[in-house]
Image 1 (cartoon, rainbow, N blue to C red):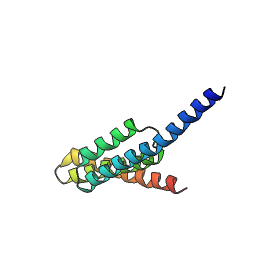
Image 2 (image 1 turned 90 degrees about the horizontal axis):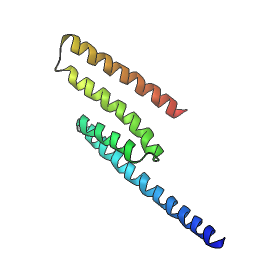
Image 3 (image 1 turned 45 degrees about the horizontal axis):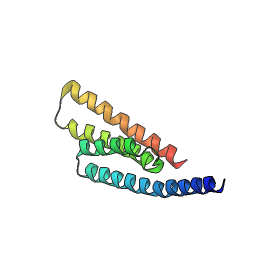
Image 4 (image 1 turned 135 degrees about the vertical axis):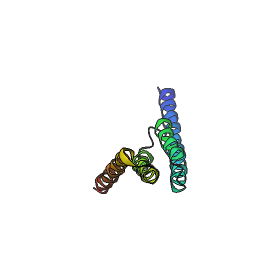
Length: 113
């Protein structure tokens, strides 16, 4: 019985230590995505965020921040594309930009509550 208890405690300790590593790696990926977004490398930022969500499903705080960042990435990409298009394509991208602006505001309100 004591061997089983010791094994379980050891396993729990290893899992607990691993969680910090997961959060740190997820935070680094989020930081990389923010850097890419800052430099208007939207595809790179988007890929980094999607990869973070897939690799680290238990890094809840990083995932929450990544959702907001992804909205900003989509909004920024749409806004930057507006200067290169006209007509219906401009209208579509403008609507997309407005959608992500509203969504970002709503997400921030929910996060503040």
